[in-house]
Image 1 (cartoon, rainbow, N blue to C red):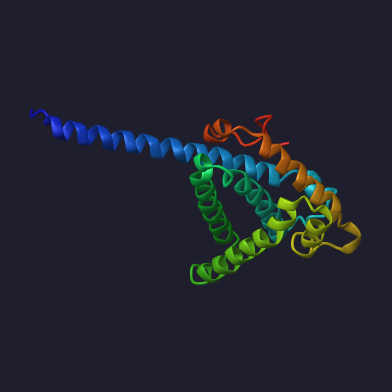
Image 2 (tube, rainbow, N blue to C red; image 1 turned 90 degrees about the vertical axis):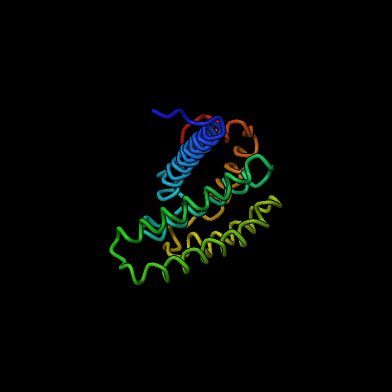
Length: 191
């Protein structure tokens, strides 16, 4: 049996190392994404704040929490790549979900363009008031987007804005090393 040359051994070692790093990064992003999804499914969002418990309501809640995670991850150089990976994971999950509810292959790209556009529209709307700490302005944006489908008497945009501000503060306190190890929330769980 032929032994690999030193050059082949080095190339093989680099390939294995890159594959291990890619696999580890995927595990980290999956863990972060799972915690975002769990946080977005907190019953309080639907029962107390008025996020509709519908497909689009769940999309709105997930969009809010992905946005909050992205805001934190975009804050420093070490976690910026994680932010892009989270967006990519979110997009794949949304696409998988619309296929599961019966949207045909031909219509998927059109739906994905629409949903991706909606997500970035919300990012643009929520970012300035969240960054400025302007809860009333954030509540107005949430009223329009996240709670738009909810009956008016069941909406509590102010409480949802407070939830977003509180979650942002929680994520802002989180150490970069925690994110890079796959933990997004301080308590390690999804409230």
